[in-house]
Amino acid sequence: MNAAVSEGASAGGHVVRVNGPLVEVEGLTGVAALDIVEVGDRRLPAEVVAIHEGSLTAEAFEYTGGVRVGDPVSGRGQPLSARLGPSLLGSIFDGLLRPLADRPIWLAPGSLESPRAPARWTFEPAPVRIGTEVAAGTRLGSVAVGDLEHRVLVPPGATGLLRWLAGPGEVDEEESIATVGDLSVTLVEEWPVRRPRPVGERLRPFVPLVSGQRVIDLLFPIARGGTAAVPGGFGTGKTVLLQQIVKWCDADVIVFVGCGERGNELADALADLAALIDPRSGRSLLERTVVIANTSNMPVMAREASIYTGMTVAEYYRDMGYHAVLLADSTSRWAEALREFSSRSGELPAEEGYPAGLASALAAFYERAARATTLGGTEGSVTIIGAVSPPGGDMTEPVTAHTERFVRCLWSLDRELAYARHYPAVTWRRSFSRDAQAVAAWHATEGRVGWAATRARAVALLAEADRLASVVELIGLSALPGRERIVLLTGRLLREGVLQQSALSENDAYCGPEKQSALLELVLGVCDRCLALIEAGLPVSAVEEFDFAPVTRARDATGPDDAQAVLQLRGEVLAGLDGLA
Image (cartoon, rainbow, N blue to C red; front, side):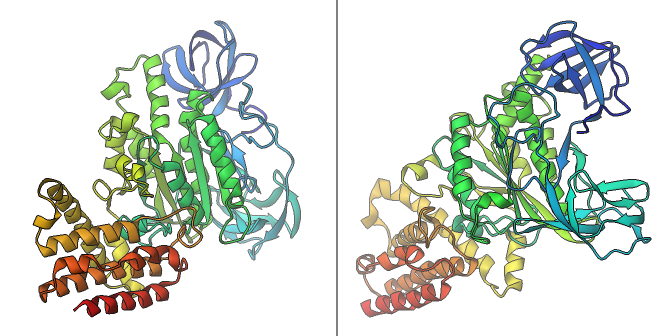
């Protein structure tokens, strides 16, 4: 926000009641809902959430200890806004987008004016003629931030004649680089975090977001601009799965929001992110990542705002024509912040004490994901992946249940799979993907016409294998007919040879789309040949005694993109099976 209070700001109010983050104020006029007010001599920021006659209620973003009745309150005349610019990438911020670099994790209570080191960037102007009419989204130039080209655009809502454009050279973030009409354009802009940034046209999600994780890309794919939730109890591997997606997904920018997690866990996650090597550049992955860290010991309402702050940052890069991914860990802690404040403000509680507007808030958050044509005419996207931490692993609790209604993909983590050392522990029993049909059409355009049928068959085989496993516990394996025993064998090969994936293996941490399809075709080809052999009269026990270890080891014995080696192995295994006849 600007250092000075805006022209619409007001003064003269005073505190009449304090209850945790809730502050009631009287005597303050000229303030609108969602405006920011400053409380007390320390100018603690708070957001107006209710106005009634001569009083208003605000939620404080800082610890309110020491605030007394009668303390002065003044308005800033503007809503909570994010300061967007080239300094975002590679940096760590709190829930209000204040930098945490070289500062303690716990911020001392204070105003939104956070000290920033002066930053200078090398500006390269775009080929736009001075005197021409430009509109919002028009590219004015760029600055280099690592390997990413940070594109400087005409801000949303601005239009007019381009009266002046700076030449190439070093500029400060706050220096003007162009004049559009009467507006001076700088490298940074501010945007209210709760207001979605405008786009030219929303497009149907079509192109898959390749994560490099087989269980996701093969069975439950997500399209760019889609939404996914990752519910799972403690110890099921949510953090490792999100880190794998951060490292390997084919996104241009990653926005990681640590929302209400324990401080030591988030510190470990940040250390792991800093140690991860970006496969694109060979340098630290943090260089194209924006981290918003709001730990559980930070003010609860800043946790609530951090989700919207992260979304605004992701939309900012989408407007440049990039594909951004927002990972929120976890939305359950965000919902708990809503519950705490609603109980303090006297709202009638709904299910399990959550506010009645929880479902609407979740829907509005996931609705901001989109693949879109930007105001400048390019294509960009924001994909949302939200972790959910249901208490006690209860998948029927309100946050998980409502989230399932609004997301297009659900990657449910199973405690039994995790305890069996099956990672990623994404269960095929509760997971789903509403983007599968659109992604199948994209695969068809890429020459993989049978992708949809192959995926459907794999899902059906896994479901049948699970059903037969419960039957075997009652009557024993030998009582099953030959076909059902081959289905059980195929289910094991699918789990061990395709769906399991080691994040610590150089060959297996990432798997390209061609190798993914080759591994699946390998297992299904083995299934078909085994069924043909038993139909020809070969005893099923002879098939079960065959050495299938090369099939389960193929994922780690071949390179991340070496589909040809998998196809060659397929021929060798099928030839070995033919030898049984």
